[in-house]
Image 1: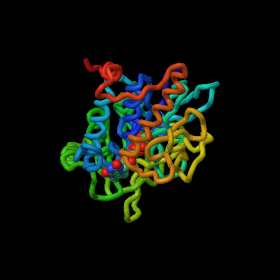
Image 2: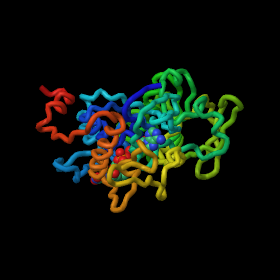
Image 3: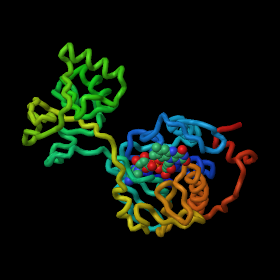
Length: 337
Ligand SMILES: Cc1cc2nc3c(=O)[nH]c(=O)nc-3n(C[C@H](O)[C@H](O)[C@H](O)COP(=O)(O)OP(=O)(O)OC[C@H]3O[C@@H](n4cnc5c(N)ncnc54)[C@H](O)[C@@H]3O)c2cc1C
């Protein structure tokens, strides 16, 4: 079990800035996120869109903001656990124990929930009985390329993920790329490459087709796809990769005994503590009178929550308010001379 001062659930912009606010107070943290990268909504929903209301930054994209936040927390050398969903939160005397979907366990006196609108999860295939194949022959992400070598792979989707992985995996497997529309949303230059490979017989493109059925008991043997006119084709398939985008699910957060207000967590706006001592909620997931779902509001919320975290993590020390411009202690923590 890993011990730390604060467990932060969610590596969106607010979770990332929490690391900074805790770090300058001398507190250690770990960050856990279900996504495969840090940045939350900024990186997943609008990486290229400009944001105009970050104080003192007239314009920056979702990706640029994420990169800057990551740069700002570098001095604290904080471990970010990605592709892990926090499943369980339980008390242990004055501490909290957190368990993730990868069976990692953490213990700390404080938890900061910066879970946004919930964890981003892949939109699943809509036909029945696909669960038994999940993570064996149906996948919603490629975590280890080795498992996708020398196979017949049917890839579903029309966006960049479907196109990029079709191209990449065609280097060592036979790919059928299936999309329900004739037009793809992904990058044109990737599609051009794929069309070249189609001519060489490395990739087969099937549009407008949708998944109709999966044949196989333990393993998939083939799939059937159907076009708009109702004609069905059978495709020999070992593995299915599906990229139908992400949905946001509040998921297990709703089961931790916290006072909820619709799909948000009620907090005390003095310190952003929930109804459980030592569990804080900040950013889009928290609610209090006048709450604005803005990044700058989340930044303010973590500044206050981190003070309360300090009091719980260092009960024998007095918290001293300091400016970064004048505090030598903070500057040392930031690695400044
Ligand atoms: C299109 C668009 C444009 C926007 N433009 C602006 C703007 O101009 N200015 C502005 O201020 N705001 C803007 N916003 C809103 C802004 O993006 C959000 O306020 C901000 O992302 C909230 O940050 P957060 O860290 O609280 O949550 P999020 O960014 O939602 O991040 C939460 C993270 O928590 C993770 N998570 C949740 N539950 C779990 C769990 N159980 N285990 C592990 N991980 C979990 C999620 O995977 C996610 O990565 C915009 C939003 C959208 C969609």
